[in-house]
Length: 194
Image 1 (tube, rainbow, N blue to C red):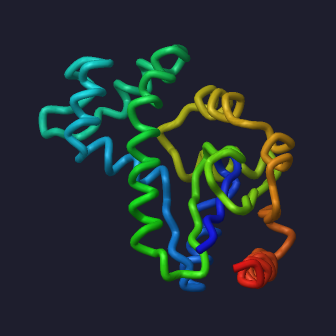
Image 2: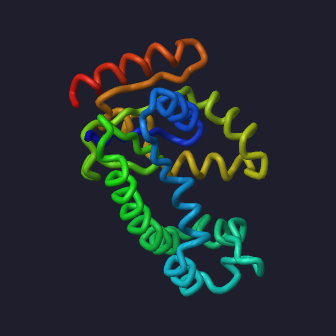
């Protein structure tokens, strides 16, 4: 079984593209949604986050206090690194379990904004999109985010060029090129590898 990464900056359309792959019967591991699940329900993570940020990291009903945590890490790289050090190893273990459960498949897709070559992935698909279009998508999707927050997130992520440096495949999600032919061609090529 091949492990294929799907990545790109915020607002490029990774989730939309991963849905198409899932329609092709490719198991998709959505790292961000799994991280959110683990942050809410993994007792070790909950205890660790409370130890780092205090009890206010969770609301009285037990749900994750995203706005409080965002304020804690927004301009504090050290705290963000410590938070990531709690969450990322747990997500890595969860991904390995996902791979074991789907070991009979030709390939699986791991969708994540944070990705590097040295993560045990066989190939990486990078989704690209013009910056203005990305900002429009983010504003429409994340109505709670302010413009400066969006700019800060984009600034803290890899540049499009840095993403492309690690790409085996590129999907251009620019509202002028059709997505489906690009996805189907990559799917065909990956099946020839496996």
